Image 1 (cartoon, rainbow, N blue to C red):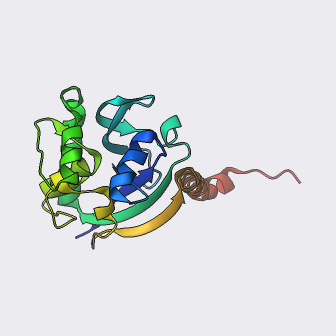
Image 2 (image 1 turned 90 degrees about the horizontal axis):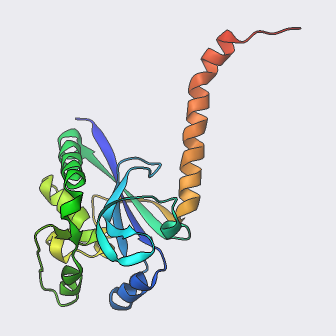
Length: 200
């Protein structure tokens, strides 16, 4: 059975909120997102709905080229899953998109993690809980704990994830998009050659 890749992205944006989380976790990267393409244009998580306001949060499609992630450091992991699992995860994300107005950020759940207490609330997730939940729903949990207690750093030790990059997020995006452009040029090259005329 053919496999399809999804990407787990751990980031540190350097905001005061992530610095506060780091004081507890002692981990360098404290935000988790899921992406469906290597160029990281289709990325989802739970976080700020408005980049300048950390108190308005919920389900978001993230812009890794935006101001919030401009200077972010990251670790990017690839997970190859079968087509059925891929469809399940995408279907779950589409449901979150349709009902985005219902969802909020599970700040209480985040504090629950600190005391190893599950805090499950209707229509509320924090970032790593959301990503872990997607894989639970697809029948392939990535970490040996429930989603409500999953920290971003837990994904770094997941057996099914392969680290493919660590460094500045913007450098990875530039590299990937340049690579995609070169692929398009290479694919178009035979047609360009066949239609070319030489005046010599």
